[in-house]
Image 1 (spheres, rainbow, N blue to C red):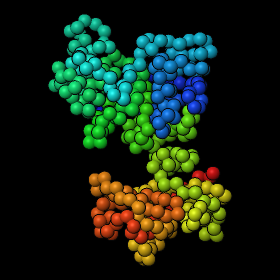
Image 2: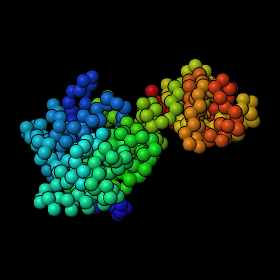
Image 3: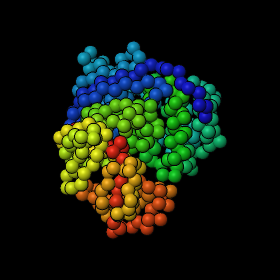
Length: 363
């Protein structure tokens, strides 16, 4: 696939307010071509409902959806274009390929023109995603990654005004997902059409999108790039969702200029952030080092909590170590380090990290 940058296309704007089963969905988003927007949040946060409103599959109580100067939905004017007239390309979680059709016929399904023209367009799109050699294959014979590429080719073949992806990688196993992320990211970067993708994975969103919008119970709680959100989460929920360890305590200023946090349940931390009163202190697992108790401490690792190893999960050359400090935390270290330290459940350990790695969020 080509990696040429996309030309800026029209802007998708959506403002939605509607009751869902347990809460009110009330959000406003904006997406541009070449900069996919990821809707991120836990299951049941309202992400897929927002996608369905944009696609015309769910009519909200009130709202507006527009692409460029064209309005698709405006409840104030009783305007609601049917889904088939909105020109959305949809990629579902299970890819929804027609099982009795070959790959090229699946792609050609939404393309107009004569059969020869439709086949040529389908083959060209399959070639773009590197699966032209599978044109005659049926979905059941394809791998998860191959089905994903055929489904994406189908979604784009009709030249959609907007591309909507609902958990596009959820049907893949972990081995297939790694390669599929790279392919999908390259494809999305080329698109002129605004793209909105739904995922419950912060890491996946960071890899696939330019910006992300984090939803919690129907509300937009923070927007920005992955780096912006990781560096300054707006709430303990966002910090936890972004993969940080969140520890609660009471903050007070110190003469040194640092902030002291006395943790609930025992223990103290320091932070370079200013803070006073109840706070959530967040730190990412890869910022935490593990040391033998009573080991000589590094001068830069001001925060130190003693605890006991409760779990070890090894993924590739990394090990995630659960530690039962007064408020549980997880450290991410190399698998080699975990082996050298003979870490196993029940071993006493000290978790240590820098004050500068500790972000404070007022409660």
